[in-house]
Image 1: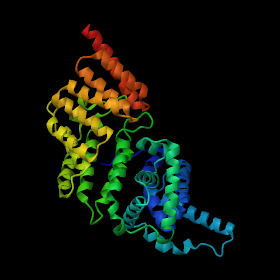
Image 2 (image 1 turned 90 degrees about the vertical axis):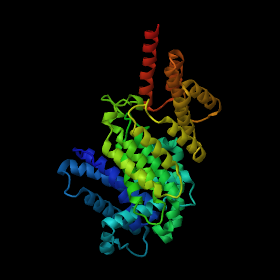
Image 3 (image 1 turned 90 degrees about the horizontal axis):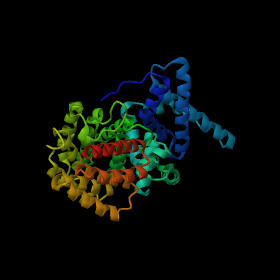
Image 4 (image 1 turned 180 degrees about the vertical axis):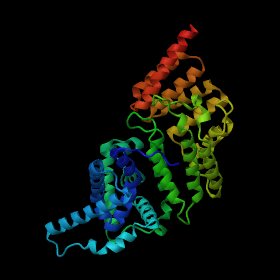
Length: 426
């Protein structure tokens, strides 16, 4: 699962930011308290900028992670002492004297514990679910306001305000009690899994920039899930189900994008490129997920993914089982995307005309901001029915309503395909 290391100082630092910023936030928050979380975030970003400048001139240090943590820690100590001096408080902060204790927090098991404690702390029950998700993505994984807005279909300014208010609430909660122990917070597992799920989805089909996939986010989501597996007395079956889903998705990455960086739909993907080792990992975790006492959305979605990953083609895929899973999902999680996918599965079982009818009903009632997906699905079903003029008109509406670059490029190609097939038919 390890990826090829980048070579320039800038690429190394960018790669490390994704992998280390969450760890650094967790450790430094545990040392200096949640009341200093804004300062910690600023210092972490400043430290990575220092790394780009320093490493570009002198080369990468022998232990980049230790370098980053040491520089960030010292910067925070200096800044807190400076603030104390300026405020003329009664005495200097003596974090330096606690060096030995602080260093112990850099041991592997303490790092894992700190990350998990911060992850669960960000999911404080006093915060609304979306605020919990936004705060975790911001503090634990280094997401920017715009990335979070894209992942949650919100405006960046609204995200910024929500995160500010959430931080203020947690500062009040944790000023005196510190970051909670895991034993006190394990009831927050569902929201933590939701966060990881959203993080992976944003990486699976990123809404920022021209790239289809952001692998860094996907690997970060898997890393956090693997951390969770080590927590005792929680429903590990759900975690395994989510891990299974993510590994099945990861397995198809080699064929999801062509040499031009364009998205390829599943029916057109070269299945010989699917990573069989990752599929085996997905099956392994799906089997372990059965230890759960509750059927979750992750169990159903990973089952659907397993059927796709083990089928030879779209035609030989067991759509009856997939349709059954979506019917179950509608009961557990009746969302716009689930309804859309249910209609697509139904069209494979009962015919594309039936699928169009269901989607037209959705068109009448849905106010989702993701209606471009709905129009693209109606267009695709009309293409399957040989109605290329109608298909083109729906693709055109989908194009007008989409603001994701990779989606727009994909829809543009489909419009050209409609024109081509129309000419061939006439």
